[in-house]
Image (cartoon, rainbow, N blue to C red; front, side, top):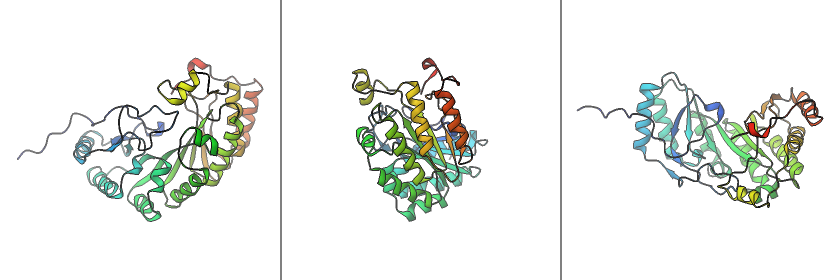
Length: 298
């Protein structure tokens, strides 16, 4: 009997997103969409309903990767919060990756607060032991009212507690925060409370993005109607400075290199924090130019 034919490519459904650092990873879509899918600012997965994909598609993807991706030693498991998959699905998938792609040395995925809360300490440790090296989490804000307004789910206290649990498992944590969510009124408070949450969690990396309202989102519609007021360029940089001032990492990266930002920072904390604050002060004083609006993007 002839073996099943190798697929012509990966079975990717709809809009697929991965972190910039996973640009060269094998993109394995194990889930569709996001299990939360209520954040007011996010339009990433509106084209599909959350589901766990059938194993036959993953087996086809792995067969394709085995033949054509032998120079890629990373796997990024999609979609929006793949960590939410039940343990039986994760155990099966990790075994399949190791058996089919033995050269892969790093497996990562997106996560959200709910997907961490649904895993016990023992399950998180087991995932790490079996190859899940890092997760990327959209923390967005550590401010209670801002989190409520954007329908992020969970309190800052819950966020801190469960992220600390994740870190204790050995899984590396890359957090994503979003400047501008506090509007003009809560701008600096949003930055301060987010910095305090990051300090308590102490992730391996922080990536700061700046809000760009999307018309297909509730927040974007509120912005167009004049009911959501975003800080201007200088206000965003002031917010970034406040975030930096209140973020203390024992050893971690702090970056604002995303295309949405008005000023790029690529630093290591704590050693570079003083220099970063000086750079931000120079930018606020007009001594360093900010990215023009037309160059910003998602």
